[in-house]
Length: 448
Image (tube, rainbow, N blue to C red; front, side):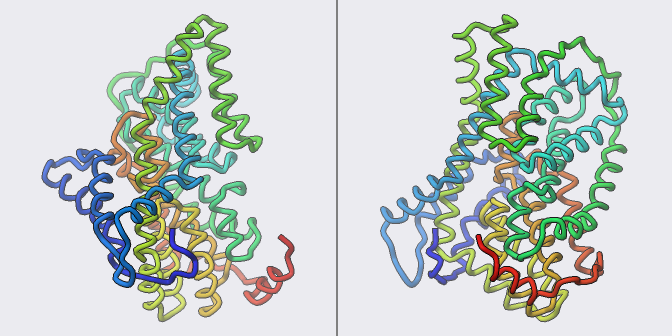
């Protein structure tokens, strides 16, 4: 990663990302299928390119570039993400082997009206993600259920998975325990509840319109058949949801889910101990491509940072700000582009937050609004990145291409739309009860 004191900036630092986008578009146009390019292969080509370029002010050897790549791919956040991926795969494999997936699907179908499966799965995803504060945990818990619902109802699998990802991003953006919400509020020095009020009013129309759109999607031919199910087999999912709701770490949550599924499966005779180990290994294998993608992306992002890509973005965006409305648009664009470059909305907020706060003070923008814009646009774009963690884990669990999911995440597209309308029409309008200088003084007096 770049040293904080290194202010080198260059357009070349963005070209690895641009290359990936061009490859994706060209492959899709030539094959007439935008899900045809294997993501891992694409990023291998991008890595090869990234290792050939260099900074103008300082040439480094191939070995040094590889070291930067290795450190980026081995960062703690990347390794934690990889661990979550393989645990998610193990949980899904064990839950599937003991019949938990089928039981949960049939239970869900029995309580959801047949004409409201899509709105229902979106609403459930929103509620769970808001309570858990993690989009990744929500996706891990709900995607396997959505896969089973697709098989039962005939609804398109990418549509159901995109709906789940959209609901997961709702909580990522609004939950009081979400790291993105906390980062957005802390970088601007405001209370979480103030950011929540502003944020909710901006995205509420997107929630309502998403539900309306999903309710209008034509049903598949044929009636939904709800098979018999055992409530005890639903316990692995219940254990995951409850443990997440009480605030346990997502790795602990997944471990509890795997343990619950393993004990119940052995007790019910669904598998032997040796077979259980085989199922766990099978789940690891399902996620191995995803783990490799995450590591390679982390290394490429480290190279892009070293080559000055993020600093280039910062300079270009801030240099074009001329008015308050332009400043808000600049803040939104900054958050979005850094997220696209780093594939991590929390990092995007932490990176853009301090600069956005300075812009807000200069143009008298309410810091509650600034925090909301940072969180809305970084979360919305994160939910649309085919190489972002959320879509990657959803695609891995559903065994489909990440590219197939993106068009069906209606909520994230609508977040961008209504976020843009909020900037264009200066809505919602709150009376500023605290000015920026007062907030700044409060921050200085805080003890961390």
